[in-house]
Length: 245
Ligand code: 2AL
Image (cartoon, protein in one colour):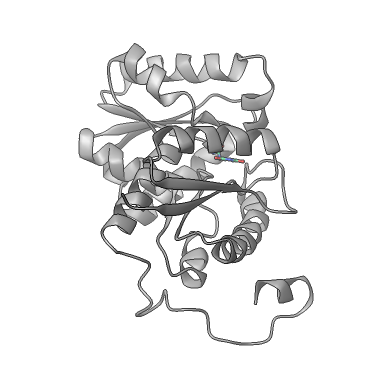
């Protein structure tokens, strides 16, 4: 049996969300796969805009470096904006997969069009940018926001989860799409139950990305070091960035 070590990085600093993500990742990992769950030592406790993403990207790079020293062969970036994805690929040699790209890719394999249900309205524009960047613009029927902050998913009240469920039901009724993509790492534990309840694929990016990284590792495929994803050119980094060398 293959023995893989996959690092699942929560780019925000919320320990509760890291636990939710780690549990979901372990629930789908193959028997031979170890999940190394991690989050940055400093940064933002939730990622809800461009400013947050810029900070989170540095944390992702710090975590990739640490994951490599701990034996990680592949990496998942478990935030729906995929912060720092291409930079992470430059510093990694194994595969690096973001949860937004993973969920979107899988959605196109099981439906002609999908809907996205995310957290705050301001994160919708981030998802739109990614759809364009990844070439999935024409596959997405609509985007919905539950209009609650990311950390509402970890407040223990269940309100955010109820809103996700309601938005998914609304998306099924209104969008004429065949699948729903959950647009936050903190929603990772909801996909299976919603898939059952709605009778259509509801896709979470954390579990999708873990299975994609496992597949790439099983095929012996890592990030290409030929071309723009080659290791960064060596040059001095100053101040707090020295630790990224
Ligand atoms: C996210 C996410 O997945 N984690 C986080 O902190 N912010 N993005 C989002 N759209 O809710």
